[in-house]
Length: 142
View 1 (tube, rainbow, N blue to C red):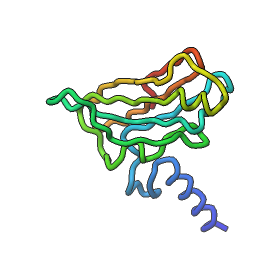
View 2 (cartoon, one colour):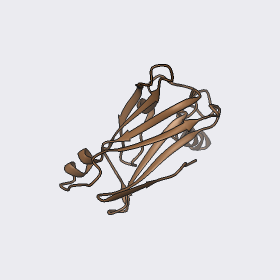
View 3 (tube, helix red, strand yellow):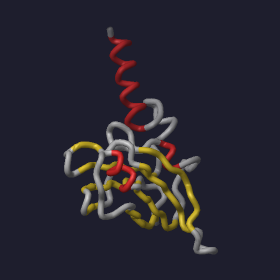
View 4 (cartoon, rainbow, N blue to C red):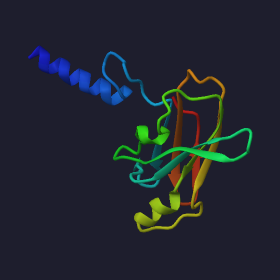
């Protein structure tokens, strides 16, 4: 029936944007996605920690952390209680040694820190990581 179809559309919309279809809760301001280039599949179970640089002290302050899900994506826990990003310098650190160890392998880069700057807090920032045991790549996603 029509109502069942609309309920399905609403469920998909909540999954995509992190809230209801009316947009009451938006997706997190910073998201991440990890793909394993060797298997060609999402990297499941990678620990990702997000930190923000305290400009006054020069110290990193943890914002949140999460494990990648079955699609290689982090959930809202990555940004902790942050609903809107602040202008500043951030660091996403990926525990690649833990991931490859769980897969029964080794890696050259035991952790991958990606440092990036947010100048426009109203924009969405997506930090993807393309991963292999002896290399990695990243870019500003959408």
